[in-house]
Amino acid sequence: MSIPPPLPPEQGAGPLPVPAPFVAPTEDASLLATRCPGCGSQLGFAAGTSSMRCLMCGYFAEIAHDPDATVDEHDYETWARNNAGRAVASLGGHVLRCEGCGATTESTAISSSCQFCGGHLVGITPTEGVIPPEAVVPFALDHAKAREAFTTWVSSRFFGPRALKDVDAEESLRGTYLPYWTFDARTTSEYEGQRGDDYTVKVDDDRTETRTEWSRRSGTVRRTFDDIVVPGSAQLTPKEARGAGSADLVKAQPYRAEYVAGFSTVRYDVDPPRGLERAKAVMASTIRNDVEHAIGGDHQRISEIRTAYAAVMFKLVLMPFWIATYMYAGKQWQVVINASTGKVTGKHPVSPIKVALTVLAGIILLVVVAILYAKSRT
Image 1: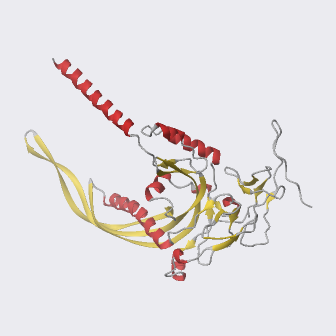
Image 2: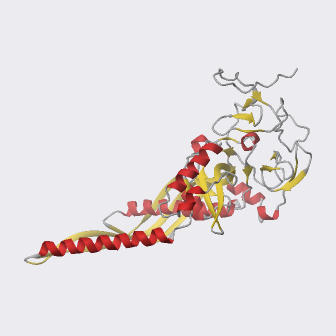
Image 3: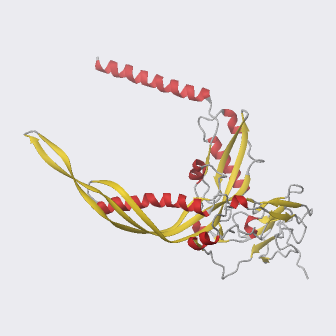
């Protein structure tokens, strides 16, 4: 016997009943069921909650979690031995069948929308050879809050043209999960360099001089790295990725397909070896600081650092972003909103008139200050 979905609450009505765990049976093992059991409309993950919600009737149900589920990591050396020479770009996509209209779509995306009816497509059977996500940081900002963040960001662009404030990102604002790699490693770094110690000598009766005495140094530093995060996709430029930042991994949940229902999810195109190289570049900065600290003194010269990596582990995490793309003056502009932290980054057009007026105002101010200074000296 099926339980009818609760009706949407009326003005002043009490809260909805406590939802039952969401269980999505489907005949197709490669597709997550996203039809509302009450009205047949679309179920999608509700940002900022832990439930699936119907877009039409308000039905909602908590996502059922396996209490024993954990976020596992992969041993890099084992993976590399078993996947030598394999690149994700050489692997095909998978075929998804829309639960609504029955149309089939071949895609490399983990989740997307049906091109015919707009229904939610979520694949739950990964393509052979493709590393599935181990964790997901769910959307914390819903569409309304993302639109508000976009509007606030646009309004704060001082050098933006006045018409920029009229830009509406309503239609272009899309929720997207992007893949990120995290890497763990234990490093042992042997270094060679020089330590500089300052000392003062008296040059004459009224003057002293600081000189540096250099001595050779060598040794070993060790460091354990945990969850070094690097992008797993070229969807964002390196500058955009740094500006938007990554999500708080403390909020990560073991991956479940329900979290991506209603959002697009990009498959990684940065393979683990390239991801590891990027992670090593991040680690190198910390290792260099460790070496400088170990050398000590007032100055350090590092001639060589040789680092060995052990116990390298990695995993794939999906992180949430709202991406707004808008047209202005015949050019496309993109703004990225981190749907976990709320941070906004992006490019925007600049008003030449505002820039010119600002420069002119600065020149006038300098002239006024110079005149006042000259009068004070007379």
